[in-house]
Image (cartoon, rainbow, N blue to C red; front, side):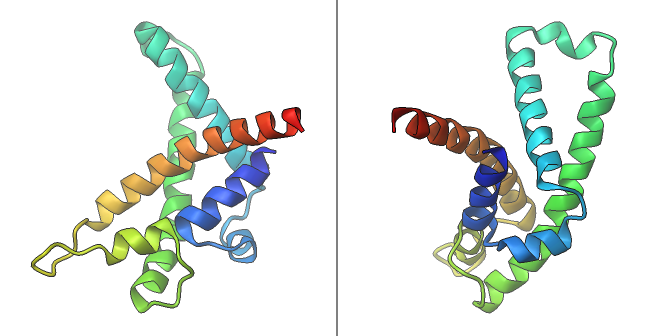
Length: 141
């Protein structure tokens, strides 16, 4: 189910189809889903126990590794997706909407860094909420 929700987020958020993602991402989708799950647990632990970040353990190393892997993936996906969005050849997605947003004077409304940060947040939050929604829908069926 995590892989399915991740696929949905990648299609809607980045406009990236499965075949393109498989070419860009050498590791399995399960690794990305597991990373997202670990980071969400980490954020929850930090919000409940603020001192958690100073405790010794592998969590610091693992969080740093996950962040690095996530940034590398985001940069790979983001570079191609921004080019497609600017050229108009991309399918409608949140990324294409953010890239094409303009201020009243015609300048870009968001910088590339701001767009990347927005999509990073959407990917993490969307993955969890989409997964929960699908679980509840399946249970109620």
